Length: 148
Image: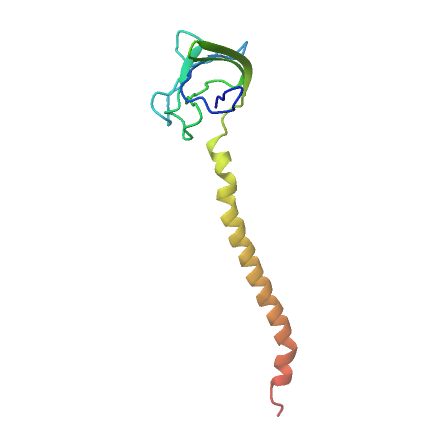
């Protein structure tokens, strides 16, 4: 989101270009797109750097500018943002930390284990309840029998 300096009003007509450089010492290889928005920026196989345009059309909140990016390597990427509006231009450069993607199965592990643990806990609870009821009834059963 970009705002006017004086009034803090949202700027809705800026041109935003993002330029990414991979972490130093790493070789970023292009990866195939498995899912995501079409037009997703990625690495050019012949160059380590790539760029993308951020637009309001791609953002879910129309006050923000967005660009879907798929990073092929983890590390500290260098990002330069070029923002231009009505002859004014700003260049911002900073480091963007990118962590490796979570493994799919490990990410789902809590959801896969929780139902099993809940069922096991319920089964143990029912077994303990049955055992405690049998202990309560054991002394009462012989005395409840009629004597001959």
